[in-house]
Image (cartoon, rainbow, N blue to C red; front, side, top):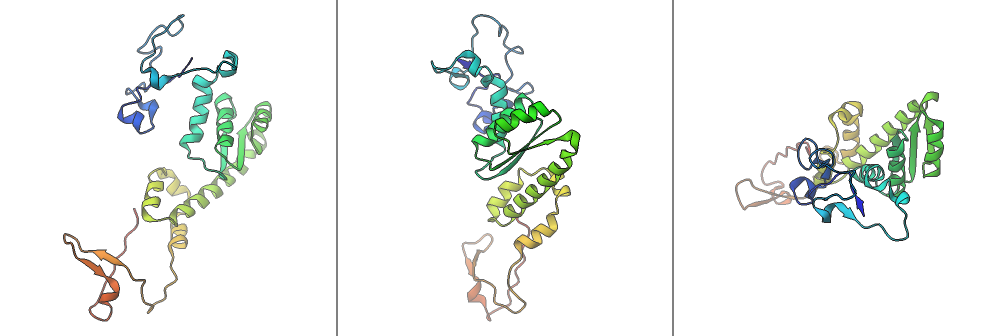
Amino acid sequence: MIIGAITPCGQCFYCLSGAHSQFGGGIGGCRFGNTINGAWAEYLLVPDARANLAPIPDDLSDEAVVLCPDIFSTGLSGAESGNIRVGDAVAVFAQGPIGLCATIGAKLKGASLIIGIDSNAERLAVARRLGANITLNTKGGGCVVAGALLSRTATAALYTAMRQPPETFGAVMSYVPAMAMIALPFKPLWMSARRGHLQIGDLAPDFSLPVLHSETIVILSKEYRQKPVVLVFGSYT
């Protein structure tokens, strides 16, 4: 059996939200060695077995799966938490054991461009064997190139999000850190992504709006030439 290094309950708010590592407060789901002793014993009682145990197929050796409970699962969960989609470009900084597993995770998730970044040539060679399309050695100034690639990728992703419906854009922005708003050209991107094609004097596209605190629906075309209409639009956020 495989026992995860993180042993959440699988039923609380954090687990049901996909944040299994936040289970249990400050130490998260890291209970072995903290609140549960005896992890090096021959037998160990594992809590919440349905959430934390997985059988090892008979055709796999212990050596083949030894990384799965912690290192591989950490790297893979990074790729999953990053919501990598087929065709995405991904940069993985540091190609140690967990970083290499994140590189594998990016490949499994369907990334079309995977950039492995490290200062160790041997690790970068392994990264290429595991799926990295490009490897950059930070000792040779590769980090500058990586920064430029990341900036262009992030800018393109933000522009694409801005062109989505309000609810989609709002959901995406809830995951964007505040520092990204400073680093990326938000205002020019917004003006470019949301600009329309109407000129002064053109008829606005017809649409309907509910009246606040009423069941009445106002249809814009019915108000045309009947009464003045002022439309005030705010930001999606």
